[in-house]
Length: 289
Image (cartoon, rainbow, N blue to C red; front, side, top):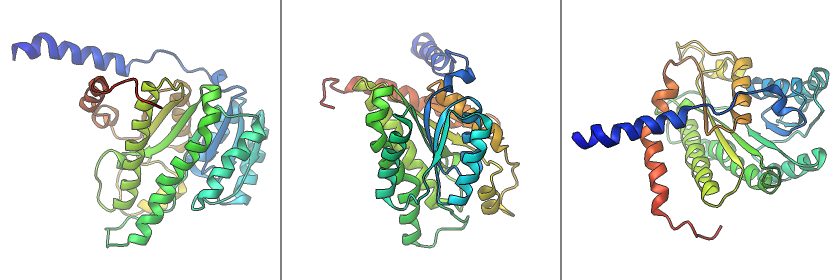
């Protein structure tokens, strides 16, 4: 007990103070002229992020399945002041499309500064009844395609010292009934991209990874899926989109947003962060990258 009071608690306080401190204030001009990809951008949070980025003067290339929806969003982006705005319609069920989309987007903008991974496949809230086909599709769209996109984008992001932004969920940090396949895909995002972030530190790759942990947001898709099931009030998608962009611009490890009070403190799991910090010291840092 004496050791804990004398050494462990002060270390914990200092670590948490460092981890949660904001080193820099967000300024909209941070995004001016930046070259940004946004997936799932025809509606919901993706659309709102595209609009915010446009008002800040960014270049944007958007993708989603709905070409009609993308056309409307791109038109609005140009009205709002985007440095340039393009779209490429397609489905993230097709991994070849995912890879080629990033390369085409990079050519359209002449590079890439930020990759925002936001798309999901629709998942109804229901108890899991051994539907392996549905589970596989959800994992492929919500997780595997994110990996494919990030791998394709990494060479360009290394050149620009850019950022990967991964839109996740509270369901990727804690167990919730009726969300097993969706939750599995979001836990996978945390496990994969949080690990890659550590590898970037070890191998001195200056590409930040921001995991965005969202509560219930008032998008059309979320409201449809949770109608009559959740009693919690949904948070506004416009403000959510802005908070994501702020966190990405500041190169934060994690962003928490939603109406759940104390979620950022409880779900961020400071014990895990401390263990991860010290576990790196157990590795031979001269490993091949």
